[in-house]
Image (cartoon, rainbow, N blue to C red; front, top):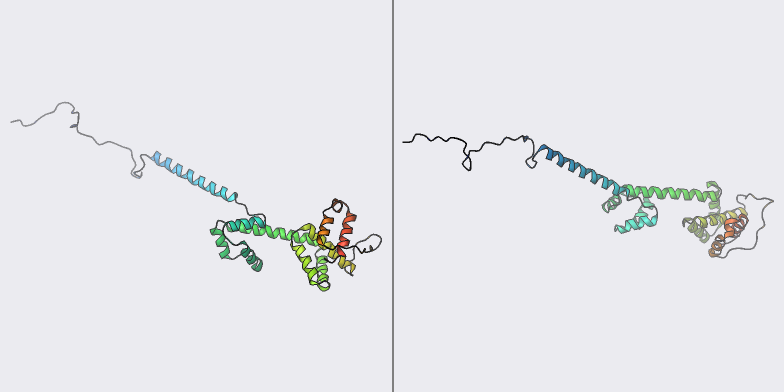
Length: 241
């Protein structure tokens, strides 16, 4: 009876015994990564993508400046499906926009910062225009005195026409209207103009329409000749437009 079998030499092939493979894999390394180097590389790519997305978001904000004109603002708001006139009326009545309005704009991709920048720009332009109008009359006090005289002495239709011209935003026409009203104010006992050789005599020549005023104002002579401008302004002052 054979008590034992001895195998000499190394056994090879499918029947050869296997030995456990020694690895250096850390216990903390997630299974989806083969090595710490793979983990580091993955986090590097993730950080790169995050940085790129932040840069794209910042660039997107820079490329969307606040509208500079009312027409631009209207187009932006109406293209978003909102009512620009209603928002304008709300601002005129309250001096600001409600939180609900800001939210509606934000939901349509128009951030509060853009809205505030537009409002601030329009207020700055309005203040500059107002100061320019005062300068045409010789200062705010002179303008206020002239306006008060007009309110007390002119028919409502003329006052409405004057206000419409002032509110049009057309600086050239506004200056003509102020110069003309100031001339009438002075001729009727208001602030005295600075004249050389006494007060100029008034001509019977007058304007019968704003079209005639605009025609004279558009000439090269009006732009270059102070004497002609003074004639136009006096003529306008004698007119009832």
